[in-house]
Image (cartoon, rainbow, N blue to C red; front, side, top):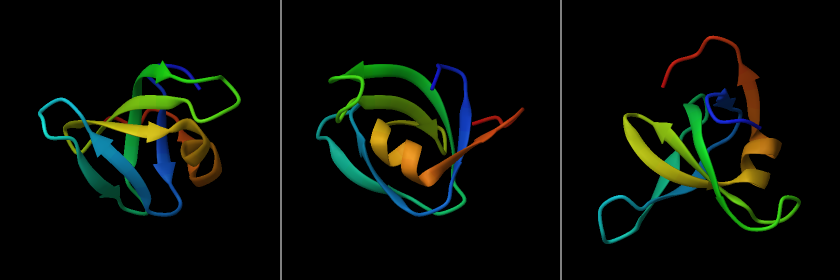
Length: 78
């Protein structure tokens, strides 16, 4: 997983908005395309958080969720 890569989700996935308080849970739907902005925090093999762009918003996802539910999409744009 690298910044700039885009993934299509194969199952709906919980995300958290964090740019504007309060933080809010959002559901990124199956088929949603997310583009990685940055890897945020946590151990590489654990519950690391990733900032992604989805639907024009910055959302945090767990890396393990993206690994399990996402497939890399070449040339996709957020």
